[in-house]
Image (cartoon, rainbow over all chains, first blue to last red; front, side):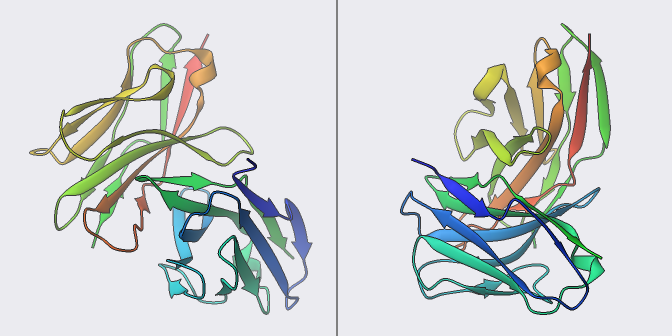
Length: 110
Length: 115
């Protein structure tokens, strides 16, 4: 099993460009999450999903959109990237009392 | 609202010495508590959790944590540190019964084990 995978691993965007980050899981977990990690800030929840077709806002949702059209995939979109969105993005799933994390996507917005 | 505090940005310890990484929490109800470790350029890996039962929880790689309800703390400990334990450690909390299973993370503590 691959677990939780994220695509791409690295990306550089210019201000105003858009992109989509893909999170895929093969564990059949219902709950999925998108976090951003910034130095000295820990992980902050952007959006989450409690099942296929559902999404909800987390702590820092502004500037991001998400979709969960298929149970195994959770997409995070940036419609108009800003330098403040430079960060490392982690996807996670939840089952059995713990969260399982992907390897992360390092995004730089110039 | 739930919150986590990790009061130390960095902890340095000599190899072979015991280590402690501190965590305090705040939740409205009963807490579920977690420790995760992150190695450079990697995602977070689960170490251990406290749900209920014994206050001393044993986890991966020889780590353990002690739940103290009166002090609202969940400190991570290891009797003898290894250089390979050097990493970033995150404490996390969620309230039992929270349907979305959202975790709130601390800001992280960088552990450096000195040979």
